Image (cartoon, rainbow, N blue to C red; front, top):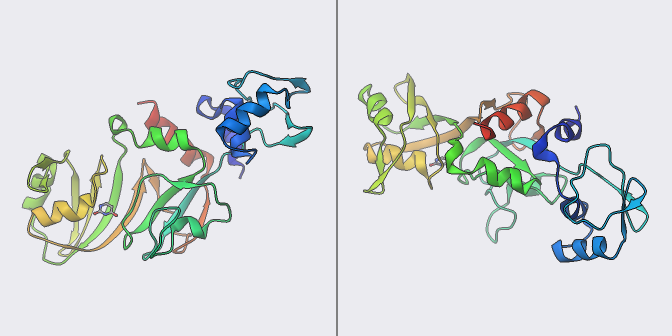
Length: 245
Ligand code: URA
């Protein structure tokens, strides 16, 4: 599998030169722009001084005569374990990014510390920003275990949009009952502790939460808790589809 190949084919992965330098750890934004300005960067053997030159997949980029990656972006799917926080640094708890072999990735959205399941991580910050834009209404599906038996009225209550925190109106959510204590809930937004608060508003309580789908991408059953892999081409395509809606 070569996600970098996929990335190069798509407009969203064509990035300005200074960003490619940054992702190759050539320095911060200012340092990378200075390198370009001072003629230290070549594209296909020719000095390039335009910071915003859009790097193509096949371009050969040299910084101070050393070749760097022209497509340095990675996109991972992880099965998040409980006990890890979705952050890059934390004073109390281990972070999901500690489980990765590289240190320049960030989570696409957040799951609570005890929540398990599908989490996307990438070093492509513009992709993260796009995926979290409210207008895209990215679908997130959760397997939920609750404390008290579920009733069928909840299906229409969730469909109408639950009010959380006493005043915040949620978008319609899809609830499918599996058995008395388990259901699937699909939401299209990401308010803080949203699923837990939705059930609290309905006099119930979430005891276990696992994300099983994000933007049409399913959690890979082969991934054990804490394991991750690169997205497949088909999975990557699903993310792109969400962003062009
Ligand atoms: N809703 C929650 O309450 N927690 C999560 O981790 C995700 C959605």
